[in-house]
Image (cartoon, rainbow, N blue to C red):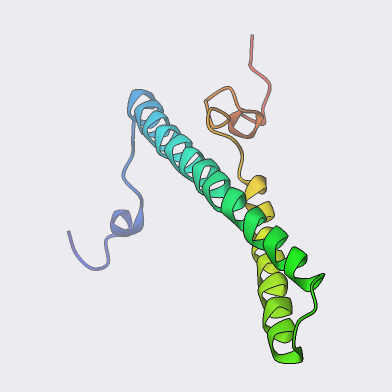
Length: 112
């Protein structure tokens, strides 16, 4: 093959069975990722809610200005982290990446 060969820049061709197999592999990886995200979201949310609640309880107490500033910072950071964790809810749940997903359906109607 020479450097001027136009076929050099073309992607390799796959048959339908190879493509279906590859799609199934990628769907499985996406499901694993979605499961990991859901678990991380859960594992972070529970203790974070406790940290936020404890900070809010402390802010009700009579604190020195220095301590109050630090507790307020903890509360602010906990709130920010809760917002980040909430964004993880945008990751579709495991099992939603299958071949039947509307996103994976062809745009053309089947021919009869």
